[in-house]
Length: 231
Image (tube, rainbow, N blue to C red; front, side):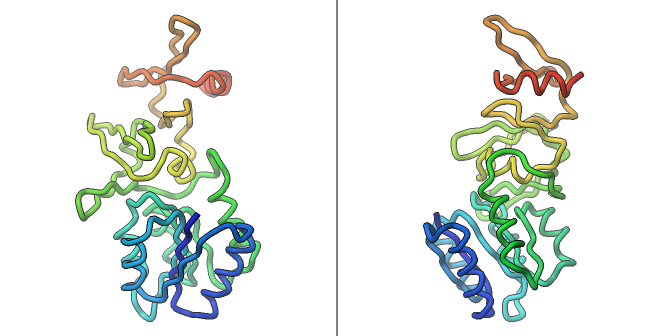
C-alpha cells in the first residue's frame, strides 16, 4: 500500500506520517511532498492508493491537485484548516475532510472509513469525475441510473443512455456515494430512485427492473434485504 502526504509544514507532515504508520501497523510505504509542483510529480510517477492533502501549500491552492487528479483511482482525504472548503471538497468526491487541528482519533476515523468494506454513511458528493484525455468531466450524481463493475474500473450508466468509464473501482465508489445508492449485486450499484420491481427469473434468479425497463441482477445474499426495502 502506498500513501502520499502533501503538506508544506514539516512538523505537521511528520506528525501525520507517524499517525499513519501507527494506524496501518507500519505495513505501508509513505511518500512526502511539500509543494504543488512536487505533489504533481509524485502522483504522475507513482501509483498511489491514498492521498492525504493539505489545501494551503505555501500560499498555493491544494485544490489544483484535487481538480487535476479527482478522476484518479486513488482515494483522497483532505487534512486542512480551511473548513469552509469542506462542502466543495466532498462535492468533488473526497473520502473525508479532517479539520486542523486534529488528533489521532479523528485521523484514525478517516483511515477506518478507507479500510472498511461496503457502504458507509452517505457523503455530500454531487459529482463523479471521469477522465477525458488530459482533462476530466464532472458527471452529476443525479444523472446516474446505475454503476457496473468492470474490473478495476466502473461504468457509469446515465439517464441520457450514455456510458462513462470511471477510474475508481466499485468498492471505492460505494464509500463515496450518497444514501440513494444501493449495492444490489457484487457488480452493480443502483440509484434506488430508479428501482421499479423485482423480477423472478428461471433457475431461481432475481433481477431488478428499472423504471426505464433495464434489468439488473440481484445477488442471492442481497435478495431479502432488497425485497424488504422495496415493499
